[in-house]
Amino acid sequence: MPSDTAPAEPWRLVLEKARALTGFTDEDCRVLQDASESLRPFGTQIATGFYDTLYAFPATAAVFKKLNQDRGERERTLRLWFESLVSGRYDDRFWTWHWLVGLIHVQHQVEHVFVVSMFGRLQTLLTAHAFEIFEEASAERVIQAFLRVTNCLAALAVEGYHQEYLNAVRECGLKEPVLNRMVAMEVQKKIQHYHRLLGPYPVS
Image (cartoon, rainbow, N blue to C red):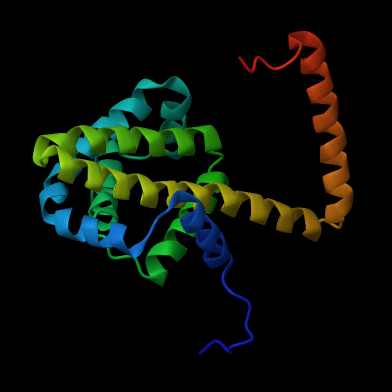
């Protein structure tokens, strides 16, 4: 059993920040729990729509071709994941697994633009079905709860990569402050380049 002085799992610290910034609360869990039985049957349609998008885009279709993955198995896995997602019951195992899922995407060189965009696609698919199932006020509560929890998951996926990238850099012997200075210098060059190219930011 972990001691009281043991460092918290990295996902726990990230989730704490994500919950505060997205507004995700236990009430959202209760909303999804109440809606779960109505939402679960749409898992198959959502999985089909999700993979229709991925297989229609050459860059993401190439990922599945490279991994030689069966689409039917991918859809089955997504359907089961969707059912767990709309259950509204999130324990430590749930959050730990989603932290690892973000790292698995990195392992297979899945770009973060794909991961984050597909969270958005999933949200769009759920929104359409929620208005089919529920009265408007209930649909809005379910959608808001779903948006908040999936935004937390997107934050875990992105930050998981960032932290493990920094860990890898440290293991290679490069000091993090040195890396940060190098990155800051390169970013500043880019900002100056685009400022010259575009002029002041159009605030009005």
